[in-house]
Image (tube, rainbow over all chains, first blue to last red; front, side, top):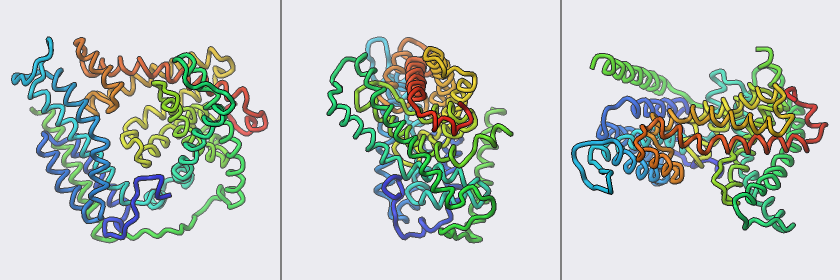
Amino acid sequence: MAGNTLYIEKDSSLHRLHPLTKLSVTLFCLICAFTLPDLLWLLAVYLVILLPPAALGGLLRPFLKSCVTVMTPFVISLTLIQGFFTGGETILLEVGRFAFTAEGALAGLTAAARILLALGGALLLMLSTRPDRLMLAFTQRGLPNSLAYIVLTALQIFPSFQKRAQVILEAQQARGLETKVGVVGRMRLLLPLTGPLVLSSIVDVEARAMALEARAFSRPGRKTSLQVLYDSRGQRIMRFGLIVLSLGLIAARMWLIFYD
Amino acid sequence: MNGFRKEFTTFSIVLMAVAIAINIGAGQIPRMVGLPLYLDSIGTVLVGVLVGPWAGALTGFLANVVWTLTGLYPQAIAWAGVAAIIGALAGVFGQSGWFKQWWKAGLGGLITGVIAAILSAPIAAYVFGGVTGSAGTDAIVAAFRASGYDALFSNVAQGTMSDPLDKMITFLVVWAVLLILPARLKARFSGK
């Protein structure tokens, strides 16, 4: 399963934390991202809350790499679009009748920092938590097992579906399907490529369902798990604290909106 | 609640997991042939039609959770609600018999696409500062902004340029698949 998701196997105290503890950090970052007022605050939370745990988990390089990969197009689009269209006093550059302003660029960077903080919180969770352990934490709190099954199975099988799409393309080309054609011709390609993918996978469904039934999948009652999650008093207090802090931030933000 | 229960059998639960993998696998086909489409909700629409609106909605929602967890597209989870509505609409159109004729299926896709575009725009405008982070769509947004429209309108306009066509093709593909799907398999689902 490891190769299909962002998860990186390591033995660190970050990895050993209860998934819900890490999820509460993720949610806290998400709430910070949309309540904190300006760029410096957003970057400060990113540096103070997200980077040290990432370093502690031995995940600093992949963490930063994923952040850069996802953020680059956002930073470019946001700086350009907001820089040109938000409006402001300090004109840095003029292109025809459009002015690129410092205020606009700052607004764009602030919007990008909000995305960065929310993304970083999610990446820290996903890089350091096995998806099955995350799902187990949810099912222990009452999420139906079948939902966890859907997510985990999809994560396990999607790479073979990507390969299958490639194989179907090659097989159809071998039968003479022309792929270097105009736009209308390419539209016509869609059915011979998607059709076999969908049909062959639906035929799989039956076999999978029977295998599950043979293993008492739909039997009601408690099920035991191979995984064991460890929780502690400290972590429970931390989760509670983060929730209280998050609610405080939301309340402060509301107060600012209504009384300012 | 009865309709909800009826939709969730072992068979349909497995179909939902496979449908999410179909979304991801089929989602790369437009790139392989060089078409500016997404085609990443074929599985979701299929579940909606075969099983029902609740199952379609759940598949759409979980598909975006899975996209996020794979790391292929971490921001997908922000659009999980829209994906759920696409699945639910496919289910409603399926139950109303719109997937029996090709033109009705196409029309249903068109309507779903317009609704998806309208619902996605506020997310792009307010959560992502008015962009989607992909060069093609952001260039279109920039063109509308340059013509003097605000962020929300520009994102609605961008969405209505791509979503209805994309969903129409998705619905038509599902219609065609249903035609050739063996009756033995179709009989196992409640929706059709």
